[in-house]
Length: 264
Image 1 (cartoon, helix red, strand yellow):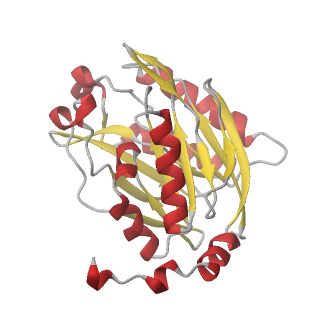
Image 2: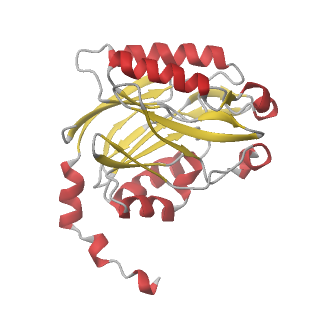
């Protein structure tokens, strides 16, 4: 992959507790994004796109071992010759349910997975889900990248760990609701500035029960400037990024060289 990368964010309206509907919508949106004349290198999806937060039924509708997701996303990434950061899904693993994201390369091979390590108490995730136990670092065609999911962005230690490991891109699928849009935009921008890397976030839209999700999927560059941002309706947000900018920013303001971790 060259340092010029084109990225599409699938800002989906997720139907709570309806995996078949959501899979059909995901396939449609992936095909739409990949069919453009200047198609993306990477397609990114939101958090828990297969089921939404149907936590009261999650054991019945979660994807066992992610098998359906892996089969569908592998076929789509190979057919369209794109990388797919397949958001995250409700994955049933043994007796546990995890909030897990997968990454597929242009050949349809799954290259990485990460399970959310910070469970969000305001949506009672901890009562239904099992937390992951490792950070999410991977590579896309040799470019180091990191994975976080939604609530994870409130924990700056995690993004710093990924940046210190070399990540130039941080992918963040989310179901971030109203009324915390200001937190969403501020935290994503802060993670980009402090770690001098691209933050690539995909949030859902729509309403589940009484909870409204506002979208505003964002790509933020290593200076903290917004490259692209969605609105509040289902859409595909596409933009080009230049990964050389991460190296330029890191050499201009040498934050990592100037750290004094022995003091904090």
